[in-house]
Image 1 (cartoon, rainbow, N blue to C red):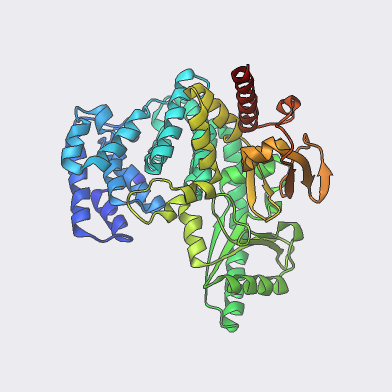
Image 2 (cartoon, protein in one colour; image 1 turned 90 degrees about the vertical axis):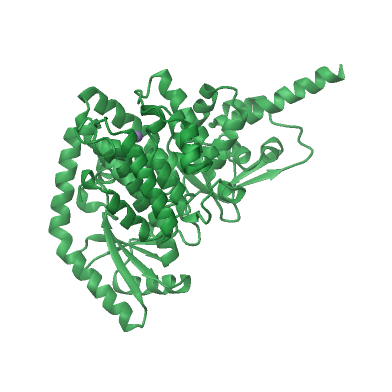
Length: 489
Ligand code: MN
C-alpha cells in the first residue's frame, strides 16, 4: 500500500492488531480530527493535504514499534505547536500532560534539517540525543517523522535531498540500529543511498533484484524441504525469509564480494518454541547442509548489544551457494522486529537502569550528557564514541562490550568503570599479556588486572586511548589530584 493512501481507518486497524480499548481509540480519533483541523490550510510539497504526514508518522509507529496510545496521539499532533497556532496548553487541556510533553519534546528538535557540517545541525542533533535520554518515545516519533520525510523526499530540491539523505545516514541510521529497529534502519539506508549515490544505488539494486529473481525458486523449495524435515521430527516451527537490503549488499560489494558470494543475502528465519529446540534445529540443519564455519554465530548465548538474539549459521546448499539460517524463539523474533520498543511494558517509558545497561549506547549517551559542559562537547563525544564504526569484544565472563574501532585496553577499562581504568596494572587479551596501546579487534576477550596500590593513570595513557570517554576520565583524575594538592598546600 502506498503511504499517501493511509487513512485514519488504516491507522485504527493497525492499532487494534495489538491494542483494543474503545476509549483509547476515541482519543486517537480526537487527535486526528484536532490535527486535521489545525493543519486544514496547509499542504505538503507533494500537494497532498498536510494531515497525510502526521497520519503516516503515527501509522509507521504502530507498525514498527507498536507504539502506545499517547505516542500515537503525539505523532498525530507532532507538528501542531510548530506549524499552527496551537499551544502546549491547548494540548494539555485536550489530551493531557504526557501527550503535550511528547509533542513539545519533538518540537524542540527543529523541523529544519541542516547539512551535517553546519553548526545548527550539531545543536539540533544534541537536542535529539538529550530528548532521547528524557523519554525514548520522543526519538521514536522523530525517527518515524524522518522515515516519512525520506519516503517523500522526491519533492524537495536536489541540494536538499542530498543534505537530508546524508544527515539521515550519518545520524538517524545509527540511532535506528542502536535501538534495534532494524526495519527502520534498513529502509532508511536504502532511501538515503538512493539520493546520496544514485548511480551505485541503481547498479546494486538491479544486481540484487536479478540475483533474487534467479534464486527465489530454489530458496522457496529449500524452505519447504527444511520445514518437512523439522515436522518429521515433530518440531513445530514457523519459517520466514528476508533478503538483505540494497545498502547492506552494497557495503559487501564495496569490500570486494560478488552479490552471489554474500553469505546472508538470503536469510531464512526458523522460529521454534524454546532455546533447546533452537540448538536442536541447528544440529539438524548442519546435518543436511555443511556449515560455512566462520559464519556460525551464537547470538542466543551472546546477544548483540541491541538485545538481538538468534543463532546465525550460513550453510552451503546442494549447488554450492550460501544461505543463512537464523534460528530463534517467538520472543526473540519479536525483539528482532521491534527492537527496544519490545521492552515497553507500561505506557510511560522512561529508560530505567536495567535497560540503560543492556543498551550500552544509552549508557554512553547519558554519561556523555552528564559530563559535557556544552552541546558541542556532548556532540564531540557522541560523534567520537558512538556515531562511528564499532567493534565488539568480550569480558572474561562472556559479556559483550561495545567500543569504537581503534580502542585499546585503556578504553575498555574505563568503559567498564573509572576505578578499573585508574587502577589497571596489566591487560590480557585472548590469554596473553598485551600492551595498553594494543588495538582491540572484534571478538577479543579482554581482562584487566587491577592493583589497589596503583595510584592512578599515567599521563601517557592519554596518547594511548581512542575514546573521548577514557580521555575525559583520565583528565578528571588529574584535575582531582591537582585540586587535592592545592587543598593540602
Ligand atoms: Mn513532521
